[in-house]
Image (cartoon, rainbow, N blue to C red; front, side, top):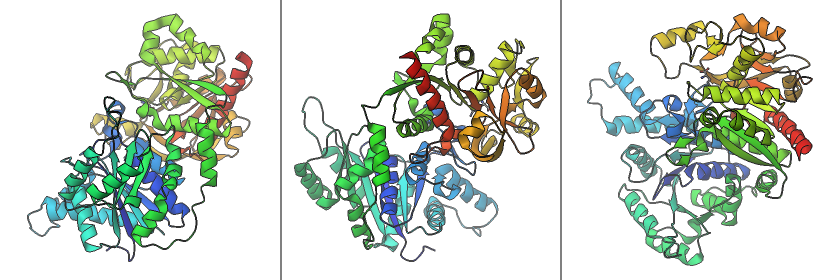
Length: 553
Ligand code: GLN
């Protein structure tokens, strides 16, 4: 049963997808916490996948892994970054998860012979999950983002669950609709009609929005605020401007210009405790948006970029954000260039040599064969030309393969992910993974979530973290093959981070005497980077990139 006096804010999207519900949810969370009200944030994804782990990144963007190992949507990453803390499994649900629990219960005869139906059984499962998330230590307000757009088939049951909660606890539940106001080029005028229609759609569910967050190119003016207020039945001071901004981190600051947090507390009948103290956040947001800061040029060599004519950098969202946080700390403006590794393969020597204009190169995580040889050439170039290099997961595995091929002279060194029968499986699957693959068990079976690593004294990694034991998030099936570790070490590669039993190699690097920064991690450090506490490895990598920039300009 719901906690006495607990409050719920549902965030819904009107008009179209991609209007920034995630940023609104994260911002509301940040603002309410700054006002002295602890929150919990929940993401609802209406698709039938049980988690986000089996989806192609070009389809759905990055898979964000929680500390627990749950594979979730990239919005969860934004929530963690805005709140500055870790989320739990209870904070995420998909239709697949919800239905799976209901069906498992039905199979166990737990419904006592009743006909099991979407309403009430699935709806109540949703409500039960919302309550479980609300039971977090100390949370006073749940902010729940319902994925998709109003009018979608898929999210209707979640909106229905929210309606029932509002009906039973009218004082405790709010609806925030994030909408879009287009300014058609031919008219040059901001139009409110699509929002009016979206509100009417939402009304047909029995739900009335309390707030409208008006996404638009320019801030919505008073006249249109009034129009929306009248036509949509929303108080004018609860129509909040959300103009396009350079960086999402400015969003909470902008919302405060329209006094969003005061209006929310007022609507929830929660007393004012204190003013939101956004000083540290503001300082970071200004640094991140500073167009005058000197540049640092980073190339990301990957493959999940092309969906039709669009470049989809969403696949590497956390990597981009992690770069921004460290760059802001160092007073630099990162200029990120996307390089499709397939283009390096096609372009040959000249395409590789073009990498010399960057201050640093990153090869991020990935799966499968496409573009592999291009990435290996980029890594070799970075090593030989002493360009700072940072490899994340696949980027570390490939860094080790490149070293085995070109320094150890094992010409056929490879990962068994690509070449099952390679004579030199420098990267291979561990025993337990072999079983999963043989049984076609792909969902949720990788090495996932947080694992400890011990760092060797005197290494780059140890100097960056300034401690011996670290915990980082993983998402991979393959590992550096222990059978090759000694030979690689003898040839100069340093494994500066290992699992506590020393079997798994977690960080590989070259000594500083050999290279200014050549380091790869088996884990994903980008998932732990936060605006106000940038990740030390990203910061070290950028410092090396800045040093190269100075030398070459
Ligand atoms: N494909 C590699 C593996 O499964 C790397 C995964 C990744 O980069 N996240 O081990």
